[in-house]
Image 1 (cartoon, rainbow, N blue to C red):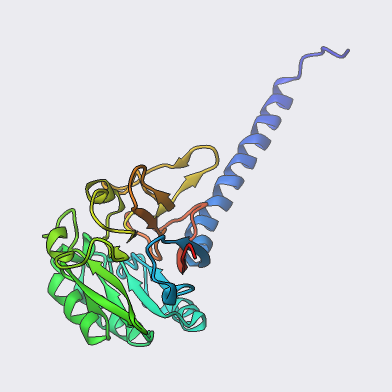
Image 2: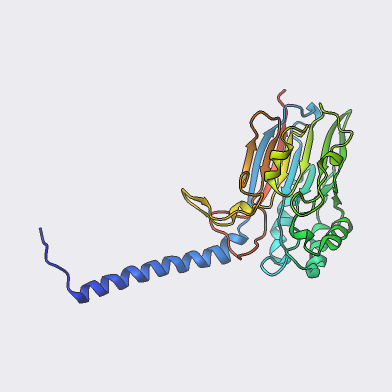
Length: 286
């Protein structure tokens, strides 16, 4: 076995090669996470079984999306594919769960133009997120209404198909808004099938005893940066416990689905956490 020590020159050469390799990898990862993944939309299809779902709503298709954060990091011109994919899916219902803008109402006209292209036979519904409350509440509410979306402020609507009913409720942002879940559910029969739109997913723990079957949320962005074997490096308050995907709350009829959202905030990057357009097909137990 050759145990001859390497020379100083060889050591410096090898160290430089390793350093350049690491810098190259970091540089490539930086380019990918900034310029590629934030625009690489994933169309995620999922079936969700709701035991109380009326049989006529079996295979009812919902498009769920969230967190556009139009502003400094997310521009409307990058969202053409989103509109095309929603139209291609041909959903029965479209649900948006908040954070239309990042902080400024400057981009509200872009948002109106985008959302005005979206239509579904059972309607388009939305709730506000925490960023929508940062000085842009009125602009977002008016903008969504102008584009054909019904903003659910602590209220619900009844979706009717033949002689059966599905309830859709929405609360104002549970974190910084004026959420009133009891008002949103007022007069909904306990045995009815109810879907709730609520921006922050972790408030499901407060709703677990209520007659809600499925909560649709965003807010977490899935963490934006997720490392293998580690998971999300950071999730916002009220978006950590149910940060990504489908959850069944124990000893409750409530399920929560949290989408990774469309845009970015805080940092203009995504890694191992692509933007998500969710296509949910409701299924019965029958």
